[in-house]
Length: 444
Image (cartoon, rainbow, N blue to C red; front, side, top):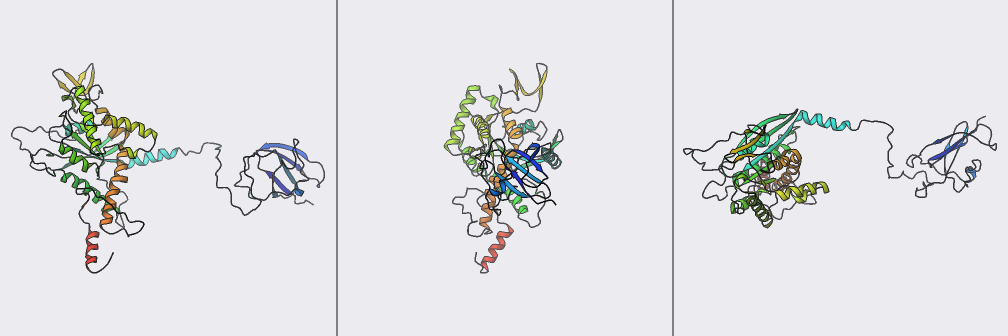
């Protein structure tokens, strides 16, 4: 008749397994040697007592104090496992069987290929099906090459650059113009929206000429917010928010104008701003570097945070890369949408009497740095900061104004609101309804 003998399983990695079908008291015979690892999280049983371990004996000159075992009920044959000394750093399991397992998760040793890396392929396929959206705004005086620069960035006829003749009237007011194109390259589709600001700074009296620009940016935030707060909203909300604003500084060679300073102080609070020195070929190398240092000094003096901001550097790699970019901002750029033959190869550039200015040559201008920043390295980061920082600031301001946030832990009190249309957006239907209810006697 088979007896029920306890099964002893050690915690150590080296285990000797014995089998003995005879009654207790006879010598044990070793049948196999194997190496296993029993995790503490699995073994939730009490230790065997000293009396239960008498028949197990010891191996390799060990004492009973050096031998630690778990006791499991076994059916049929008797199995005994003797083990070497435990690691002194290993915690001994509690004798209480009801104690929960250790919260520490041991490292998982994979025994074969699982295919986790296929998640990247799935995300890539899904993203390529949906496509990408990128909205850019160019701001600057007329004649600085804004349209040509956009065409050079994407190597497409995004905008028809027109040269004003003698009979062409100068626009009296600033009118924003937007154009949307779908650009496809190697199967990747990009829905690009470019907003131009003709007439900015062209008048004698430029007082508050930035109001239409700030109003347009706030209007896109409001449109996205109204879609987001709907109970039954769209699965994919159309994103018309401005992700980046390229500000063209005229190549005066002196410093930022008062108009530039006043506008940039308001603009950097609502959108990512990347300043550039337009038509940099009109300056010598020495004049360009001096002009750049003066602009950087103006930005620091007037607390104008342009992209990439220092406070948004996530790790050491981002900090190193963005520090190099900040040292070169504003980029001295030259735009051109025509190809010329130079040393047997076609290059984008501007042809002059003394030679050809190559747009993609860092020795001539810094257009490649601007292109890498906007497209190749920071495009997704521009969109993330727009959504997580600038749009969230607008959203908090609007919800506080509409009294949708209860006064309590969730209440956000903005001590100082930025000037411009962002601080006083147009009231929504919810806000108007709340005002009507308050007039009827409801208290908030």
